[in-house]
Every structure is written in C-alpha cells, then in structure tokens.
Amino acid sequence: SVTSFLIALVVIMVLMMLVFRSVKTGLIGMIPNIAPALVVGGYMGLHHITLDMMTMIVMPMLLGLAVDDTIHFIYFIGRNGWNTKCFSYFNKIRIAGAQISKTIFFSMKQFLPLSYHTKETIIQNDKVNR
Image 1 (cartoon, rainbow, N blue to C red):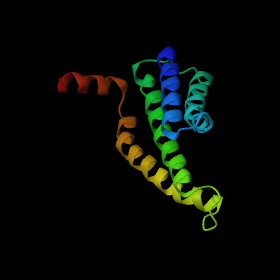
Image 2 (cartoon, rainbow, N blue to C red):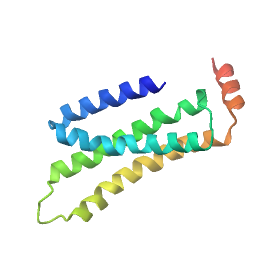
Image 3 (cartoon, one colour):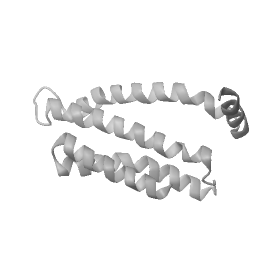
Image 4 (cartoon, rainbow, N blue to C red):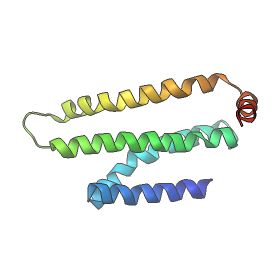
C-alpha cells in the first residue's frame, strides 16, 4: 500500500507539472498534497492504529481532496496573477479559500455518516448490497 501511494504521488506530481506547465509550480503544489497524508500517517503510527482495509481508505481520500484543493488554489492564483493591483495576497487566499472550504464541507457531509458505523457494519452492508 505504501508503494502504490508513492506511485500515485509521482504520477500526480508529473501531471501537475504538465497541467501548470512549470516544474517549479508542480513541485510547490506537492507540498499541500503530501502534508495531510504525513500528518494522518504520523497520527496513526503514534497511536498504534493498524493499517487495515478501513484505514487504507483514508489516504487516497485525503490525497484526492488535497489535489483538488491545490488545483483550485494554483489555478485561481495563475488566472488572476500574483502581482495585480486589485488583489492582495490575503484577498486571493480568502476568495480561493471559500471554494476550497465548500469542497471540504460537502466531502465531510458525505463521509461523516460512515464514521458512526463499525467496520463490521460496513462489511455486512457491502455483502447485502452485492
């Protein structure tokens, strides 16, 4: 699972470099993509949480949200430019942050009910739905 996560990071890094047409932007864009996975992975290791089927689902979801939010932010900054007179740096973060917050809110709204179920309940519901 660690190997597949690293492969996904490399593929995402290459794609970000291609999309933004800049190696520098692609590398800088990887910082917010790696940070959530490192924090959650470190928390799981620190609290001795085993890596099983249910906990392995967390990393790809975090990576997907981080990539989506990074693309929102970098695209917004690239479209409006860093040095325009009408926008300050903090104003750009405020505007792009609103889009990112909406994405996170709706994702949490969809996945929060799963946190109230046990692993056995989710597996049992999966067997019933097949």
